[in-house]
Length: 118
Image: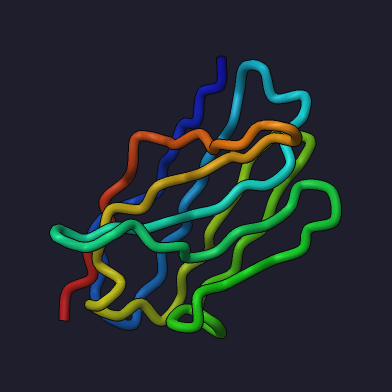
């Protein structure tokens, strides 16, 4: 059993910053990668950023490159997403995702709302 607990969402003005956190707990011995996805009504969930827990290799959506930074504290099994220069288009529910070696599916957090006002 794996649990992902997210925090850090909220309301911010355009140009502002937020930091999201997600901590994994439970059977996480083979944790391999963590990431953040986002979803708006009527659209598919999309990758925002991901990071591997051992090598800290990162991947970003083109729309957030240069503005968002993903990082991981492997000792705490926690992933962070620092979001700067936020735009109204970043408004979405942000979901934490965790992947494990040898497991073909990922686990999801409950989601946290990020709202950027213009």
